[in-house]
Image (cartoon, rainbow, N blue to C red):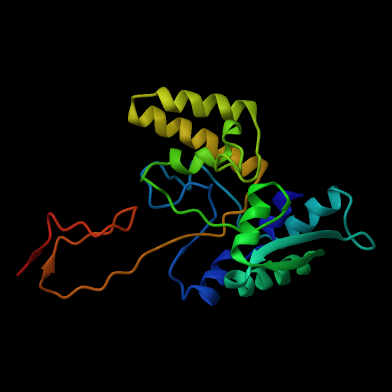
Length: 224
């Protein structure tokens, strides 16, 4: 059922409408495309396949005469995007009611497990996939930790703990991808898009490059 919700969404269209095409469709896992461990090939996700969504819903017992009904919690800043999501889900037979709350109230509902279906975003504290995958480690349940979905999976926890100890970079990246594939399969979240940053500079500025944290790093920048 959760997979059907992902197949129903046209993420490139969403980015075109709401982000002026500045962003990358969230068609892989939860780890964003800016991080070195990211691999759309090794962590395939969900593309726009409305017929597949309908098939999964039918297999779960939903269809004509029995629609899947959900209540989506959000804030005013994302209301237009959630209305778009509501429209796409309606096209495959899912009826979603949108509840708009003040930011503090929404955060409290999410942190205390009172929101079964909600919108959130995540900005990394440091440029490593662990900072994103920590959101699904069972010992990080909110409100004390960042696991807002209260996702719990023994295989995932084991991989997360192994990655914490792994010193070899490529082996650690492989563990990250294994975890991300579990997130794709279990679908506790729906990644809509990965942020992109646009920087405008003059032609006489060299060495100014973007980085995963969007920091302004000037050590190797020079002006001709």
